[in-house]
Structures are given as structure tokens and as C-alpha cells.
Length: 104
Image (cartoon, rainbow, N blue to C red):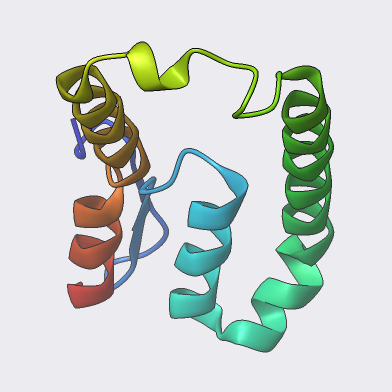
């Protein structure tokens, strides 16, 4: 619940959580304090998250067999579409909270 995450700073300002990862925190801080402040405060965290994800993707890419050697084409199309749907749902999970924070 958004009310549980609200921190009251003073009578005019309230801060509430709207991000659950480095990228969302960067966007949130950039909206509140500007891009230069977000780069200074959260830039290293975003770079580290990008680096870790890049290393994971690199290792995964080379650990999998090539397309010619795999049976990927034997997987039904609806399973591919379901996996894409799950991925998009997970990636867009916090978009509404970021939008609501921008309107505050």
C-alpha cells in the first residue's frame, strides 16, 4: 500500500517508494532533484547494476547452444508469447507508481 511507504518530511512534502530497483530509483530521484543529482547519487549503483546484468547476459549467451543446434523451433508459439507476456508484465510493474509520483 502506498500509504505504508509514505515518509512525511514536513507539511508540504511527502516521499514514498515507487521503485524496487536501481533504474527506478534513478528515475525517481531524477524527477525529484534533477538528472545531475541523480547521476551523482545513484550513477554508480546504476552502472553496477548494468555491469552485473551485462555479465550475466554474456555468460548466458555463450552457455546456450546455437540456434542451429537447439530445438527452440519445436517450442509452441503460444509458449513463446506467454513468456514475452510475463517478461513485459514484470518489466512494466512499477511504471504506474513512477507516473503517479511524477504527478504529485
